[in-house]
Amino acid sequence: MFIIQLTYKASLEQVDKYLVSYREFLDTGYRRNYFMASGPKKPRTGGIILSALKDKAQLEDFLKDDSFFIHGIAEYELIEFFPVKFHPDFERFI
Image (tube, rainbow, N blue to C red; front, side):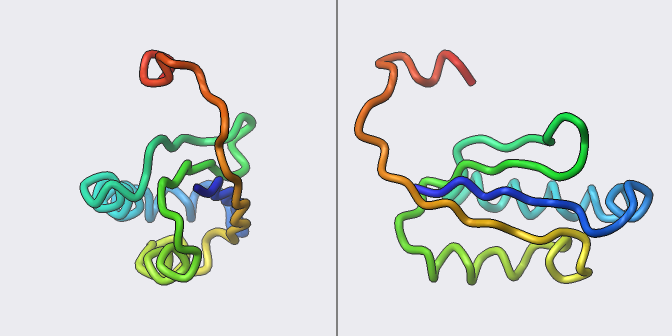
């Protein structure tokens, strides 16, 4: 499992220009069961994605299709972790 931390390298005006295509990319990730949750950071300096993928190379390859990556809008930090404990009603919190 991975936490993907995006940090914007461009102005919010540039970010907003690619927001529709970025959300389409996220939709693809959700349909493929790659992503569990996503959203902007507060303040809006980037975003966070929780990924259920276990293969880092597969995730890195998929992220190359992100319009933010393609156009140099954001940089990514992949934080791998192994969840060993979680709330039994985890879905209720998202």
